[in-house]
Amino acid sequence: MGPGWLMLRLVGVRGLLALAVAPACSTGTLGAGAVLAQLVGVRWGLPAALGSVAIGVALAAVLGRLVGAAEPVPRTPTADRVGIGAGVLLAAVPSLLATGSLDTPLQRWDAVFHLSALRLVAESGSASSLTLGSLSYGDGRASPYPAGWHALASLLPGAPTAVLTLGATVTAVLPWVLGCAALAVQLVRWYRPDTVATGVAGTAGVLAGVASATPTGLWVGWGHVPNAAALAMVPGVLALALRVLRTPAERVPGGVALAVALLGIGLAHPNGVLTWGALALPAVVAVVAAASRALLGAGRRLPAVALPVLVAAAACAVVAGLLASPLAAAVTGYTGGSPRSLGRAVLDVVTGQYVLWPSLAGGAVALAALLAAVVGGARGRWLGAAMLGVAWLLYLDAATGGGTGLSGMWYSSPARLSVVVGIVAVPLAATGGVALAEALRPRLGSLGPALAAGLLVLLLTVPTVAQRVGRTASVYDLEPGHPPQFVTAGELAMIGELPDRLDGVVLGSPFSGASSAYGLAGVPVVFPVAGQVWSADQELVMTHLADVAAGTAAAEVCAAVERLGVRYLYQDAAPYQVDHRYSELDTVEVAGDVVAQADTARVVELPACGG
Image 1 (cartoon, rainbow, N blue to C red):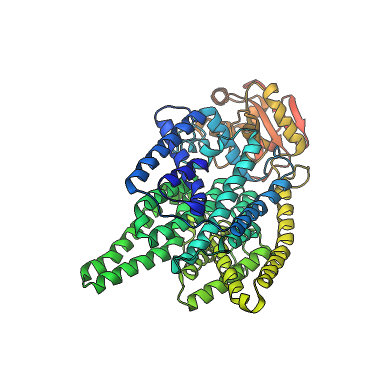
Image 2 (cartoon, helix red, strand yellow):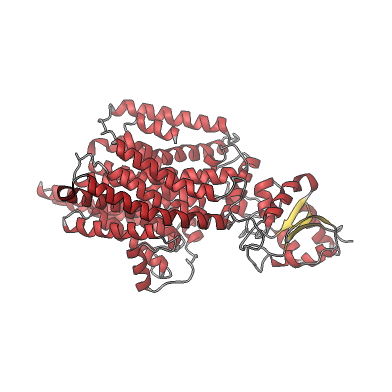
């Protein structure tokens, strides 16, 4: 966060907005630095990261000197800062406490993948988005994969599980709470540029902390760590876009800052940039329409018509390019689970009972946002309502099965798009709540609305936090017999001893503890992640697995075993899930000695190949 904040200060972005955008700029700087380091053959680590930051700060300083002094920014009121701080604590502390220990792994497939990715970064010395995708190929070929989050997290000290949990918490909480606060302020200032908007930022901060359809819910509940970080950065960068759009004098430095921030979001997860673009669209339309009207009023008809046409053509070109890109091919084949009826999906968004961890607080935020959108629209302040409408359309498409294709670039996932709705709903609810308090103040005085709001937040917070703690604890549970689980407590202890016991590669299902053995302890395994594109050797060994386990494989198969370095088989009678591609690994009879065993898992030494 620090490097991004310094660069933003140097180009004239100050105050709460700088804090909200800093994580995205930091991720952009480090993610781009990791790519550059890989291209010039430098290992990624603290020295390379410091070099990247130095280059970014130097470029920001030069730009700052060129554009001149920044306009003064109103200081965020103390009460708002307290509210933002409370929101950070509410968002982070319950989940951290519920993990039980920083040594405990999150029992979600995506979390296992990202542990393996961090291990690969440490072993290869590359956190480049051009190469990290090699994890998904059995032959280790370099392949693109957004690695901005991994470039940042790999710099943190500590055990792999601690790095994942703390890194995910920080990147999902700080930009989310600060960004929602900044976006709420900018929504107010879009129509009242000179207002201080007292109370808005603090209210948004608290609501961001108690809401459940948040990036924290996404990474804890689903394990989508980099996607959660990318979506957490969107509110702050969206707030910066609103400021740049309504302040012509800041468009050069603000535009550069915006580009770096969007790079950071994209290197964390590309659908974060798509989210930003979709939610920024109403504001862009408003600015383009105003500019076109001004040109028409000045008698310049051709530019007045050409401007919106060119902007629309550029937007369509970007969308078409994305749809034709490898990214689209990688994500558009997904479905978000059992589709809901349109009526049920509409009820979900209106009442806040999204697929991602529905709660009482989420319902209150959704209803307050809807009310604020309706009242604002009736008064001609339609921006928030339009942004909420865009988010609703995306969620409704995913929740009903993705039939229109609108949600395809978000994996047609209602869980991910629950957060997209929250990006707008939380700041909009905050603006509505403060407006209501101001309207009631003449009748009830200043103390009455404050007490009522505090009591309401307390009533919403207690059950929501309790629910969050329970849900978090369930996906960190190591006690045997609580599926789905990759590892149990005993299995985790066994994995920790494997590096000293084994002298070869382990063959095992990625839905067993074998994949965790790689991410947690660095044990070499054949399948560190599920969905891997098998190499020819992997295909050959899996086709003749029974022969390999019996020690009767043909010479060709034995040669493949030798090239892979396989000497052990990891078996688990209770894997995370059963997958037909890998299930035989857990059930095949092995003519070898058991090297290690714990709970339902064991590691067996394979017999000499070919007898």
